[in-house]
Image 1: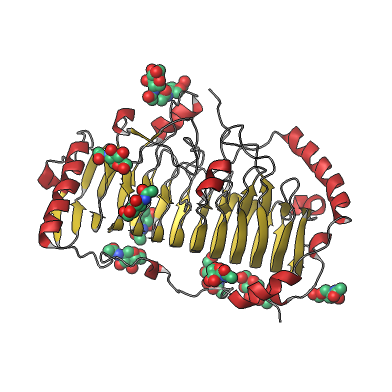
Image 2: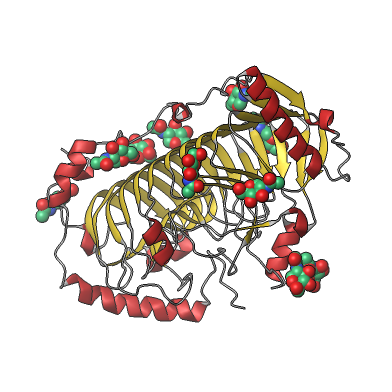
Length: 485
Ligand SMILES: *[C@@H]1O[C@H](CO)[C@@H](O)[C@H](O)[C@H]1NC(C)=O
Ligand SMILES: *[C@@H]1O[C@H](CO)[C@@H](O)[C@H](O)[C@H]1NC(C)=O
Ligand SMILES: *[C@@H]1O[C@H](CO)[C@@H](O)[C@H](O)[C@H]1NC(C)=O
Ligand SMILES: *[C@@H]1O[C@H](CO)[C@@H](O)[C@H](O)[C@H]1NC(C)=O
Ligand SMILES: *[C@@H]1O[C@H](CO)[C@@H](O)[C@H](O)[C@H]1NC(C)=O
Ligand SMILES: *[C@@H]1O[C@H](CO)[C@@H](O)[C@H](O)[C@H]1NC(C)=O
Ligand SMILES: *[C@@H]1O[C@H](CO)[C@@H](O)[C@H](O)[C@H]1NC(C)=O
Ligand SMILES: *[C@@H]1O[C@H](CO)[C@@H](O)[C@H](O)[C@H]1NC(C)=O
Ligand SMILES: *[C@@H]1O[C@H](CO)[C@@H](O)[C@H](O)[C@H]1NC(C)=O
Ligand SMILES: *[C@@H]1O[C@H](CO)[C@@H](O)[C@H](O)[C@H]1NC(C)=O
């Protein structure tokens, strides 16, 4: 069975060298062939003008329009009432499932929603499903522990926009906490913990003995008005929080932790979802802190559900081989209307990265990145090609992604290892890329060698940028769309 490469795998050094040489040669060639872009986008951007720059303390939590924000629900009960034992050893899967079902009934009788409380203790469980108009509340000292028995994470159908499990063909393990076709679902508390105990799954991955795609810690599918706040999420087997085909999602005041080498433990992955607010989160993990996605190759293209109107603000953290915020690499349904601001990233491979590939199709447009600070980052801003990571060999080799209208402003980096690398996928041209007020101080010992921006088939403008931008971004054009009047 094929063993897909982890999303942020590093190339061996000799391949990097070859790649660099090839790119250098190609970028000189490309320069003479394509005109710089920008003017046609000016009207579009002037019409939208999202408020760039620092945000103060504005909140986007209003995206959640359910009735559970204040913690009030018509019916409530502790999981202990359903026979759960918080000893860290007893499996409470049946108790959690009974509790959700019983509360659903009681809430219906009371004409409202329900809240399931988890008191202090260590509550071992397999996967369970949430329901609508429902709050899962973890008190301080409450720890939900993911079962170590793979059968307690049963298999479910793959997502239509992926066509298969992300890591293995066929079905995938369900998430520990799961919800499908719901409205108004809240996971919150006074900083209780959900610990997926993912090591067993990482070992299956490392040992190449994984039979089916790993489960997420929390997944909501086709749901509206989702709020996840004030909890600590640890050791997810796979991506930690995965809202997919969702609308009106708020994810705030979370601490997300996984070992820095834990494979594919992304923090938060909004996927084919709209009106998503992610704010005030601290994340350290083995993959992207946040990754915006929208399906994979021909499956994502045919499902055609973009991720749109996504706000990511005041996120901070570290991930040694991946990015603060990534867009892609699965973005085949399209990504638009993204605001990323007040991001702080350190000891990471990249602060912001757009990853796509041939065969993805789709688009990434109207993206604003503002006020990013970073320390000890390898490639501060990166547009990269995928590593030939496809769902199967039936992807359309002519399906190129369209990347346009990306503004990157007010960026400060110290001790970075090189200038930005901006490479379009082969055959594509990225247009309307704006950099303004970017200051990147390179680490002393690499300052001479790596101060040059590496651009290939990427065009736009740069104003007030240090070190000096590549030739492709020096065309000043009409500057209004780049935030200058
Ligand atoms: C920029 O982001 C940082 C957090 O990384 C925040 O402390 C600072 O207030 C922001 N600046 C502005 C002008 O909002
Ligand atoms: C949970 O939901 C999934 C997806 O809807 C379903 O396949 C599974 O049977 C449900 N599990 C339980 C215990 O109801
Ligand atoms: C999504 O959820 C809505 C509301 O529950 C439901 O009507 C619809 O059938 C669901 N769509 C799919 C594809 O399951
Ligand atoms: C959630 O966290 C925020 C920020 O730390 C805090 O203001 C709020 O009171 C917390 N809510 C609860 C229910 O603990
Ligand atoms: C919540 O708990 C985590 C892990 O113990 C801790 O790092 C974080 O500071 C806590 N958050 C709050 C708001 O107390
Ligand atoms: C993976 O391999 C390691 C070392 O060979 C072993 O200790 C561990 O039990 C294996 N893990 C699984 C889940 O098979
Ligand atoms: C994977 O499949 C093999 C062979 O069917 C089986 O022995 C093993 O228990 C399975 N592993 C898991 C984690 O389900
Ligand atoms: C661009 O994205 C922002 C959100 O960042 C949104 O408010 C605005 O309406 C979008 N503009 C267009 C033209 O879609
Ligand atoms: C440039 O960006 C930095 C970091 O956000 C900010 O502190 C500074 O005020 C900005 N300068 C201008 C001229 O906008
Ligand atoms: C481009 O802008 C810079 C200042 O940002 C200015 O010095 C330069 O003359 C401009 N070049 C053209 C061709 O307009």
